[in-house]
Length: 80
Image (cartoon, rainbow, N blue to C red; front, side, top):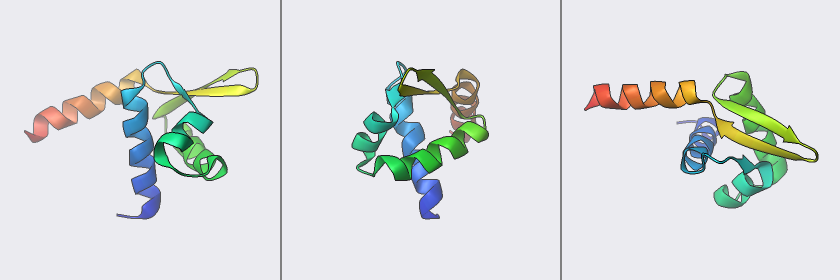
């Protein structure tokens, strides 16, 4: 698996654990990557429709979109 895809999967896992949302800096801390590096992947996931980014002044909170969560859970159930 390419490193880019691995980082994106890790971002999804972190956001799945935090339904209340996390800032870019919070996700970067959880994954131990630089915030600027993380920003690239966040916007790729946003463009793919997987996450939602909410602007709160200078903060940006990231959330997994509910549609993505339900699709992912449905796929996992089929694999079993």
